[in-house]
Length: 612
Image (cartoon, rainbow, N blue to C red):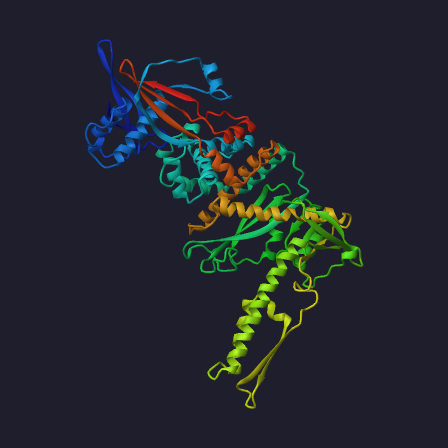
């Protein structure tokens, strides 16, 4: 076996270049012919002086031999030999697809293949994970993603890389570089797609990201339409919210990288903002990237107009988006809305309220009121669980504030304590800022001396402001122009907004949205969009499993599925020949239950056998 370098010409461009093939000599009658066993491609990475060592090591691996001598070359020669030996098995081995039903069904369907082997010679090599990969491909095929990419005119290699980068975000969240390593060294996705990801170009994942961004609107519209058909969704409720994530580095070349209010408390980093429009079932209808310091209220009209949301749809938002300008625009455009009211004064009449239970069995009390014109309703809600939490927060802030005031009083009694009026006023300002609004409930007086420059005493008294969190803990208000619904229906529709917060948590913690390592604007947009697409397919999987009685967070399901690998078992037969068998391990019971719920083969990739 040897490597042959051949000059060839591109029929499309007329360009002349060299290609490489792994060749072996075979005798046919009186003639010896060179037979190509593997195409090594145009960009064969092994230097010419190491070709003999590479071929010798491939032969040793095929015949199940340890290296007789140290490989003459860098460590990359051993990795390349392992890779090409695996490709030879995949190409020349006898392939049989294992039927659904487990090991017993496989033996029945394929018959019995009994061979005498030397057990002491057994080796298990090249483990590659296939559990998450198979389930992710199921979700993509369920909505026809591959056909959609074909319809967009994307080439076969580019389609494969797009699948790889999305599934990589689902199975092993990380940067594009980390995804590339995962595809090459840990994942068996290439086997399931019959693609060699180890041969892909350095910038292949970036080209995939650019292609996805180019077709973002088409992809989002088509995928949501197919998801709606798959699950019979009624798109009568639209959820809209924003979140942000932070950059590693200054990202000076990205105009969207701006400093603002970080929801992860990363005030040391520039931010980028992601806006999502979802339906009531938690599937994404539209996504968009904004500047890191964007004002939430300025994004609503553009997102709904680009979405083409039909008039009459119910828009659910939190208070950050519920400006008077936005509500006026929604009314003018014929939309209904249900928002968290921005009014600061809290009120609640327990005698006029009705009690319901949350999904967790906790009580919530609802008081419905209407404005004088009858065009809007206010839903005042009281949650005992929320009240307990806010009461504890109020107590901590008040105790911290009073302790700070007492420290100032003690300082005034000390000979060298701070007494300057200007400095004490600054300390009071900092104390109010640190205690989250507790200072507004206190009447504070600094008593100056005759000169007015120094303080002689500090007096304070707690005076809770009516209608505040201190006097009405656990109370919040919803506002809507949907006047025909009762209190319970309004509240349960509003709780869908908490599902949107769960979406953001999933994007950030389970699917690698944060942090952002890219600095170019298009690559940052691509990173966020890939994460959104990964979430779509995760949601398809979780929703279908939930219908089959299997519930759980994605990181839990991912952990269950991640235990299954494809491995190559190598035996020495009684006649001295070497038997290679590549197949998937038996899935654990929890993984098998997932496969059965999705009607998937528990042995991804089938069985490949080769005798050398």
